[in-house]
Length: 348
Image (cartoon, rainbow, N blue to C red; front, side, top):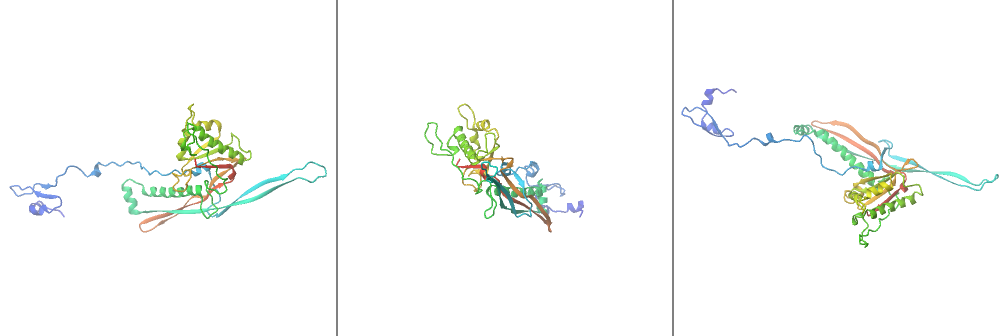
C-alpha cells in the first residue's frame, strides 16, 4: 500500500517509537516528521566481512595401503560366492637305466584351495533442502557425500585385506594361518656392549643391529624357499609406519640403514603399513611386525589382494524430499599363493 505525504505527517511520535529499531523522533517547530533516531551502530554484520576459502580441507585419515603393498586383482564377479585355486605338485623318482627295467616313475598331484567372498554395502543419502543450504555455503554436498561412501567402503576393504573375516575362508595378509610361524628379532645391545633388555628397533639407534634382523629374515626365507631365492630376487619388506624412522639410523661412516639395504639387496622394495604396528592399527593389531616376501616365484605372483567387484553403484532412489543410493563392494581378502615365500618377524 502506498503512503501519502499527508498520512506520513499525521503519524505521532509515539506511533513511530513502536516501529522496530526506532527509539525516538526529532521534533521540529512545524511538527513535521524529519528524521528517526535509531540504535547506535559501530559496524556491519560480520557476514559481509567474512571470506570463505574455496579449497575444501578434509580430516586426515589413515592411508589405505594394502593394495599398494600386496597388489590387487579381480577374481570372479559379484555373483561369485566361492573361488578355487588349483595347486599342482610335481613328483617322481628315477632309477638306474637298464634296457629291460621298468623302475622309476613321474607323477603329479593336484589340490584346489578354496576361498569365500564377502560383500558389504553403505548408503548415501541427502535431502533437497540440506543440499541447497550447503550449496549456499559453496559446498557441493552431494559430491562430498558420495566421496564419503567410497572412502568408507575402501577403508572396510583395506581392513579385510589385512585381517580377513572371521568365520569365512577369507584370509588377511598379516594373519593368514597358512603363513609360516613368525620369528623373533635379535636382542639389542647398547654401545657399551651391555644388553638393552629389548628386541624392538626402538631400543637401539644402531643401523647394523636392525640390519641384522632383516638379514635374519632373509636367511629364514632362503631356508623356507629351498634355495629359490637369491640376493637379486624381487623382494618386498613391509614395516610398520611407526618404525619407518629406523631406516634413517646411521652408522659411524654416515651410511644409513636404507642405504645398506639398497646396496646389498638391489631389488628390495620397502613399504610402510600403518596396520603392521600396534599404534596405528585401530586396535586390530596388538603387535609390531614386519614381513619379508618374494613378489614372484618362477614368474607367478606370490600374493595379491582380490575383489569380486571394486564398486557397484546401485539404483538412485528418489523420495518426496530426499534421495538415497546404495553402494557395495565384494572382496576375497588377501590370497597367499605361496605362503612359504613370506617371513614374518614380530616384536620389532
